[in-house]
Image 1 (cartoon, rainbow, N blue to C red):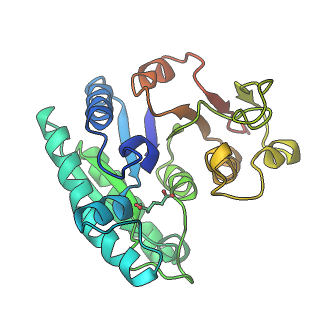
Image 2 (cartoon, helix red, strand yellow):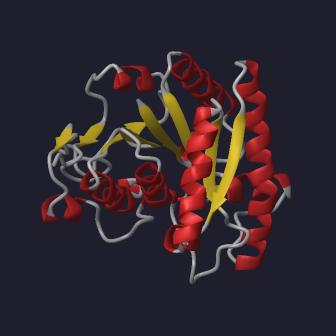
Amino acid sequence: MRIVVKVGTSTLAHSTGRLNIRQVEKLTKVLSDLKNTGHEIIMVSSGAIGMGSGKLSLKKRPDDIATKQAAAAVGQCELMYTYDKLFSEYHHTVAQILLTGEDFEVEKRYENFSTTLQRLLELDALPIINENDSIATEEIVIGDNDTLSALVAIGARADLLVLLSDIDGLYTADPHKDPDAKLIEIVERVDDGIIALGGDSSTKLGTGGMKTKIHAARLCTEKGIDMIIANGSDPESLYRIVEGESVGSKFLGRRA
Ligand code: GLU
């Protein structure tokens, strides 16, 4: 299988903003092992701004664009240094690709991206993708890595996109507020009812950014790609996912 795994900042970092070493070590171990069994893995990783803020000893995550873009430039190095070090322990070679919205809109750039990605997989490297946060401006920003990972999954003709989050999946109501909220294991179709479950705000804490995840699900499933939302606190669930067990919420790709 060709699998795109998107890792959010909540999976990579503690609430202090510093690296969650235990979790990142577990994740890189599982992904290395899945590669060893013959699966093709592409990662979409967040965390550049958060890690850069930590490295620059900023007191809090920056609000202004210039500092955010500077923090991303620092944090992206730190992020790739960490992945390179950890994946190297299992003899896997990482490759960094940074993208902006324009790279999906300008045909030639999109073609270059797809060709490079394909070649990296043929060379058995592990592409790790993020938005080019130091360059992206309002006009060309993709804005969130859920959407970016869906665009990557489509460009890579992946079989599956897995979004690792701080929530188990999509619920019938906000599980932080409603004790009767139930996990929806299978979503056959991303219809208006499902879109409404995402809420209004992409940053609403209680829903774990569900709006952008449902948007990603719509993009993927329309192109026939399955998407799963699972809890990133248990990277070993990726083994169960590839074995076809029910984990988190699965959005079924439309079959022609
Ligand atoms: N590209 C951002 C970063 O690396 C994260 C965006 C997102 O989490 O959706 O900090």
